[in-house]
Image (tube, rainbow, N blue to C red; front, side, top):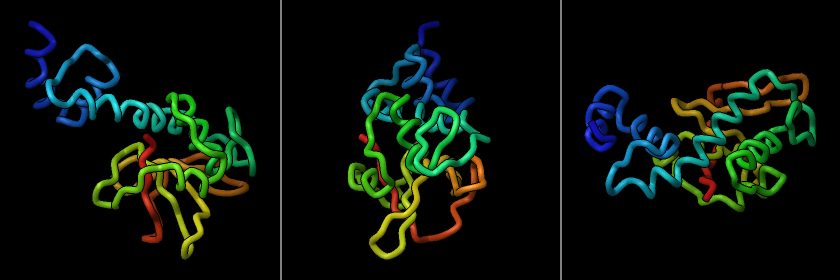
Amino acid sequence: MTALNRVPSLMVRAGTASALTIAAVGGSVVVPGVASSAAAAAPATKALQVAASKKGSPYRYGATGPGRFDCSGLTLYSFKKAGKSLPRTAAGQYNKTHHVSSKSRKAGDLVFFHSGSSVYHVGIYAGKGKIWHAPKSGDVVRLQKIWTKSVWYGRVS
């Protein structure tokens, strides 16, 4: 059985998104017509995995890893490991991303918390209304539900 013949059964068993992730990351499954969007998703998926792997790492203001992070340090580190460069601060990262609506958000997008027009915090969207982030002094990198509607979303290109 060829890789192409396995795609329909993979999509039925694992779901379309999982099959696209397999295509983007594993490289052994080819889905005609979606390779370009799957390839674009690969760095975001990798960054999300890197952020999750840092679960429990302590928060430290100004830290960019690999053992301690502040919020934008975690996103900077995660995307750097995925082959993408970002500015150092949450506001700088917001300015560099392609802004997307909450309805268009995808796992691996950045979530920017704001007060008025000022961005004050950033995390990586994990799906189902949750983010990976480095919350604050005395806390650790963790998965948490988004607690406010005062957020903007940005996609790293």
